[in-house]
Amino acid sequence: MDPIDAQAAPAEKIKELVDSSFATRFENLEATLETSTRAVALVEESQVELPEDVVVAAWTQHGNALRLAGRYGEAETALARAGALPVCDLPTGIHLLGVKASLHRNTRRYASAEGFLLSALAAQQSLADPVGLARIYNLLGLVYSDSGDRLQALASFQTALDLLVQGSPRDALATTGHNLFHALIAEGRLEAASAALVSLEPLYQSLTSTRLLAKADWMRARLYRALKQLPASRLAYERAYERLSTDPRSPELAVLIKEVKDLPAAGWLAACRAPSRAGPGGSRSWPGGLRHGGLPPPTT
Image (cartoon, rainbow, N blue to C red; front, side, top):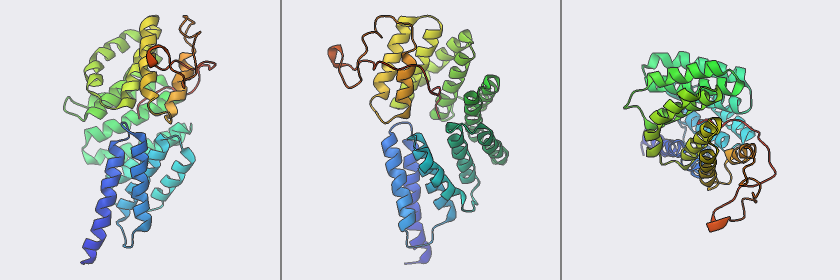
């Protein structure tokens, strides 16, 4: 076999696994992690020299999958493996910066997270790719949001949204719009948030990701709660819980459970039971004994 063909076969398989892992990040976290694990296993087992960009992409996506699973220490190690190699492909290098920024945001290293994204923005400018720019501004907005700089967060999310058009990828439109919606609620701009929700509803209704649908319900619940519409808020929280609880390993589930306990007592919270028990009609009931805590639920 030609040496080039021998190198190309495992490289293409690794690329397929990386793409599959990335594509399922909102749909199935277990599949995301399983396929990224297979990709780096192939990297480690390869008997031929692989293109460095392929190796970097595999370790970057594995680090991203571990990050999404809340396994931050392992994610740090994987991303260090990715960063130890030179990168010739600019989009691969930019994606690595974005994932590193997200990990640093998750672990509250906001200054370094911002630095990675500013470097990514500078690199992205030469690619004439507005969707790529929008994704970076969206990540930058999350850093500002989590660090408490709400005005900068709003500005970043709005910039990201302005870069997108009707034909842009649905995941980019949905996540950016969702994060702007979240920032408006946090800033207390409820009229603007209500208007944003009306614009987002067609996108939300087209989603197939259980995780994104849960976060949409979560944001509806927060808006209704801020508007003092507690029955509507309760229903939205319950839908969010039902959806997130399909993946008990979701790091966001515990945050949702804690948040809902901060609602004013309205009878339905007083009778909460553990999530392992079924309520009337076989549905799960809210767990009790927890208080509000944790980070807000942006979409990453």
